[in-house]
Length: 373
Image 1: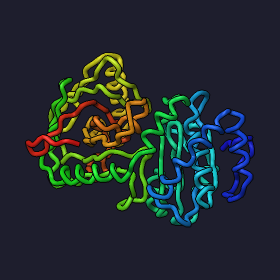
Image 2 (image 1 turned 120 degrees about the vertical axis):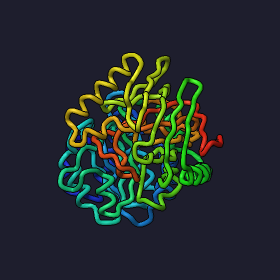
Image 3 (image 1 turned 135 degrees about the horizontal axis):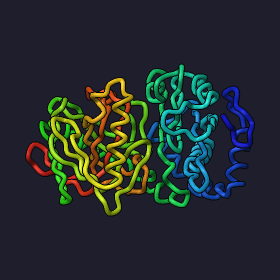
Image 4 (image 1 turned 90 degrees about the vertical axis):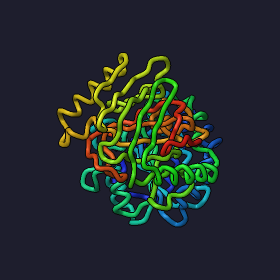
């Protein structure tokens, strides 16, 4: 692991040296003024979203790449926010990681040395990376160790100058979003059938009887220890293979660790018996099809690669179609379907992929009745 000025981190320290190194690096990169202007917006995130009190906080991830420094800005904001409210913190920085790469050894060691019931703030360009001996994923690791966590990934497509637009999706009224999520969650959980249509041609039906919707509203993670930042969706797995219809993607397409905004073109997924049968469109459609075929060849459970695993509804009024799927899928006025795995939120699909495909202006019917979000 590379730590800022080149000093390697061999143990988890709770001292001021790393603070000085990080602030010095941010100053050299002309990012410090932006951090100082924005860190107070992260205080309610630490105090309300994951309710930090006396937990130790590990701020971990990477610092981004040239002209794509939003992970670094977030890391700096987390540090100053933690410092302002008296939270004991440490910093662990690694090189940016993407598909199928392992996290740096020292970052893994820093996570492993965290006392149980601590907290993680993760911010990274692509992936945090596989964690080797401490767990298959940071979510599983956090669950096993009872850590609170916030995670923001997939930021490699977002340029530094988009930070303020990104912050609009973070600096929101979480109480109001929670109320919106609560109403929608109740409706989706009670539903037998959810139909989604758009003027562009989407017309897809999910059978969901017996399935429980999940809210990621960011207000407070009561039923789980953490979640994504930005927050802002309600989602549900289908009942087995009971998804039928067509989805016209005009928001963003996810494949191969990359996300493409759909500015003029669209990609159409034809779905039968819960599986994507054909993908129509231009270059992006061909790339998605190629990625699914490659994933099918190397998958342990190839039967799950083309399955539809999720219907999600965006509820974040501050989010917009910026680029990263993490933000796109939260945008109020969008919905998304995911291709691939859903076993971790109540589904039955095991796959090496989970690809959220975002489309705009959904018209939603629950058991035949149109609803508003």
